[in-house]
Image 1 (cartoon, helix red, strand yellow):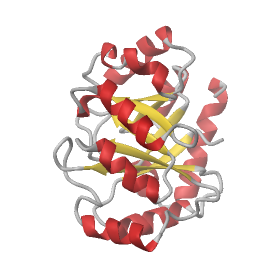
Image 2 (cartoon, helix red, strand yellow):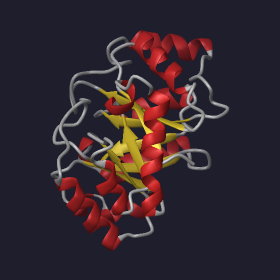
Image 3 (spheres, one colour):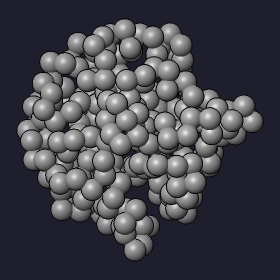
Image 4 (tube, one colour):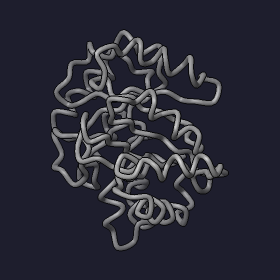
Length: 233
């Protein structure tokens, strides 16, 4: 399984379709993260918040996300209505939901509601934590999720930001307490920052700009994969 999970942050359905099409031609990619930004919890707003009727029409027509036979879609729900937003993406074929701990004042209720509505037989749940947040915010809920996502940037919702080295301390602390829980990093992951992350035992690298802006995305993914070998990931 690839350590690389490409991330898509998109303002329109047309842009989303084009970017997902690029990943379809990279054989090693088996999982893609779609960033969902509501323009309130994080900014700027992404699709479908920029054109909500388009998503409703897709669901009504029974359309699904492309290449579901080999690609698993993970929704990074950077939104205040994460519980509701999740349902629409699941209808399109998504199977992984990442909830941001800071997006709600009642994280227990959010997770319980999502499990009650969508079940956990075919859905994988994860929690994301902002770089300035304390681990205590998520620790009571770790038994309810399958992975934790640490943000590697100071302001979420925007690709192309500089790497914030505070994430290294966050991961180090978390891994010392919970070595059994898979960890993924999202934000400013590059060929320069990836080795430090992998050395800490990170399971997956969520990579956006570094792949999408590369002249040869497939070759760029291969470079990331090659980094994993020295660390036994």
